[in-house]
Image (cartoon, rainbow, N blue to C red; front, side, top):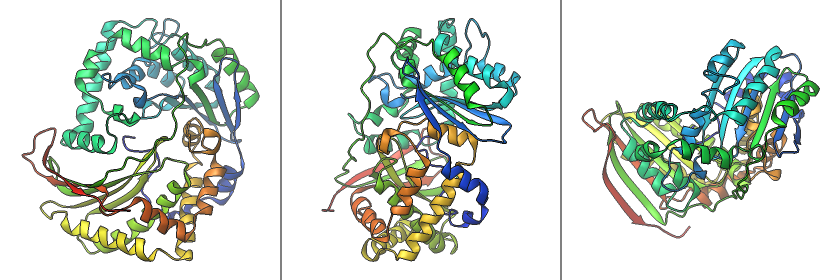
Length: 461
């Protein structure tokens, strides 16, 4: 995901309580995965779930866009793509080979904090899948040519054009404001000129630097025998050797960026609607305040939906705490009909924020919101692939540096009504934020355009 990892909007969380299957919810809550480390430093997470016929396999690299050298944006993403080209022992596209094993949901993903490869396979094909994944990390670049690099570079060009169509200039400015030069996430932008400067030598350097076994987590969830899986992982991943380069220092939680005032950006893009986008820097995934801001998001989304959507003044409202490993952003996105403008939605947001910061919410509302998040977490973690992906993440703000379901549920159980109000006061200041007013125009350039960019002096928190 471009902006964050948490799944879905917060509005439907309370309604989803009745959709959770009680037996599965309890099962997901109490079963902790098996964790251990091979001699070469590779971390392993085994999460067997009896009765399932498929297995989710995730191999996660503890490196992503944040780890790219300055001037080499796109290197992490391009390297991820190159690792799908097969090896001398397993020639041809890796996706094709996995499909022949009956795999589904095959993909790779480059995030700010990680790079991961995953698939869901029939339980009987787990050993072959683990062999293919180990091949990827042992010999993934052995047979690669400059022609192969050029081919995947063109794929990245197409992906970037589709992703940024109509808004490229706007999102680049937003990213620069939220993550200024020197912040790890400032390297997350993908410049076409940087990508086109990458050759096989740079990709091999990135692979050798970050794709060693001591930077990997193999995470398996679903219907499998953990004893058999242990043996296969040792057989296929155990021979991987650590890189000769020194292991990079682990990233630590970053302080939130102080916007020092309210930045207002007016922009135009090729879209059929207008939109208001308001953002604040916020704490990382796993922090206590991160959970409180999730409840703030649920509360604000419900209030703004009742006020704007149900009255016909907005098409949709999405409020979320968009959590990352090192730092996060709290985002409000309100879509309105074209030419309606964004002044009225911004006024409504400000009134609701002032009320929340001044009056807070009562204990019953806080408990209801927390139950909604707890139920959504259990529902989400019922899917084997989601579980395998979550278990593979390195999250410095979590105790032990890893996602753990029970610890995550305890975060929400501990949030009080006063915590919700305090989080709104501390992080959602009305004059220390980024406000983007996006007008839909058919004549806007393909990359979009920024019409006005004004900074107002901030106020004391």
